[in-house]
Each structure stands twice: as C-alpha cells, then as structure tokens.
Image 1 (cartoon, rainbow, N blue to C red):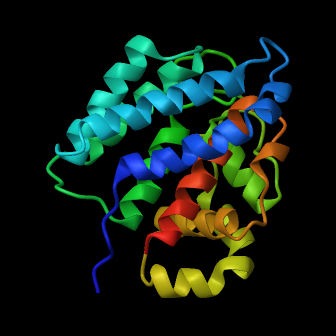
Image 2 (image 1 turned 180 degrees about the vertical axis):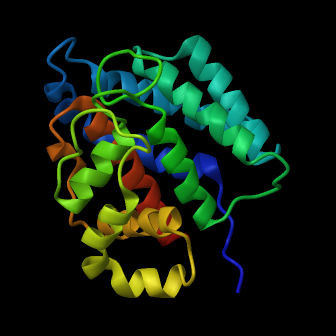
Image 3 (image 1 turned 120 degrees about the vertical axis):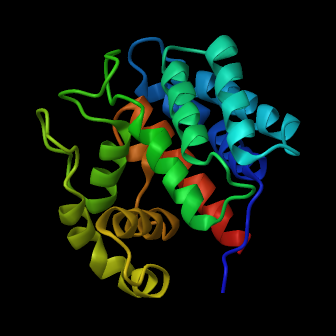
Amino acid sequence: MSQPTFDLSDLFGAALQDMTANRQEVNALDGYNGNHGDNMVENLRLITESLQEKSSQTPAEALGYASQQLQSQGRGGTSQYYATGLSQAAEQFQGRSSLDGNDVASLLQVLLGAIPSEGHQPQPQAGGSVLEQVLGMASGQPPQAGPQESGLDLDDVLNTLLPAGLAFLQAKQSGADTASAASQALMSALMGGQTNPLQAGTPRAAAGGLIAQSILQALATRR
C-alpha cells in the first residue's frame, strides 16, 4: 500500500508552533547572542509562509522558493545553512509531484546535515553536523570528535536504536539500506519521546532536534 502524501507547509507549521512554544529554552542555550530561538521562530515562519505561497507548485519548486526567501530574509547566520539544506532537498526531489513519509525523513536528513554543529565553516568539520548531534543524542551517545570520512557511522546508530524501534523498523523498512533504516530508527526515537531535543546542550542541535521531532510527530498524526 502506498504511503499518504503530505503538505510541507503543514509540517513546517507544526515545527513553527513547537519552536514558538520553546523559543526561550533555545535562547537560553545560546551563550553568544541569546536569540537563536527567536531567530528560528522567524525563519520557520518564513519557510512555512513560503511553502504555503507555492502550495500549488511541485515540492522541488516550493522548497527552492523557500530556500531563496530564507537566503535573502533569514535571521541569524544559521539561516543560510537551512537555506542550503532546503536547496539541496529541492534538487533531490526534482520531478516529483508529491512527497510521502519516507521523503520527509530524507528531507530532514538533508536539512540537518547541511548545518554545522558549531562555527561558520562552509562544510561541517571537527564538530560534525547538527544531524550527527541529533542522531548521537537519540542513541544516547555523543558524536565522535574529529573529522570522519563519511560522517556518523550509521551502522552504529542503527544498532544502538534497534531495540527501541525494532517493530517499527521491521514494519516500515523491510529490506531498506542502512541509511534509510537509521533514519527510521531516528524517527522512532524522536516520535516515541525517548529524546528531549532541548537537552542537546547547544542551540543549533536543540533547534534542529525540535524541528525534526515536531515534523515527525505531525507526520505520524496525518497517516
């Protein structure tokens, strides 16, 4: 049976709602400017409104437009990384008329993978990406320090998360490759409430984890 499709503006709207409710907690993690939560509320508002504006277009066109709007009007330096992630997702979904649940999981991987966990380097280096931080948080293990050839070892993450999400994985990802299965394990951990993104310790990881959790939980209610 095919999976249902989803309105991206609804999913990002859910992330906007949760970020608005938790903006002060995210601000408190920002020891530099103290406004990362405020910035992400405005960035998510911009993304959601952009996706709504292009709701009659293809997912690639809508995501590309949201990326352009964020690039020109986004708040804070992290907005440019989200713009890059949205642009990369737009390229990935070229030719698609709609997206299903697995596509949304892939979108989150691309989006969070584009954001360095710290600093302003063009590519994640020693600190890794926010995706690695969130995966490490969900597995109960901090991401490894230092550069890695292929980022986080998804086999290790999958093996760590399998006990909590085994039934979910078997039902949804029979025969899936490691990256897809690890993505579903992350989905299970975040949706199941075992992980609190606000305990991530850094504003970028907290915001990224909150966005992923909000979108995944909204995804589950729309099945």
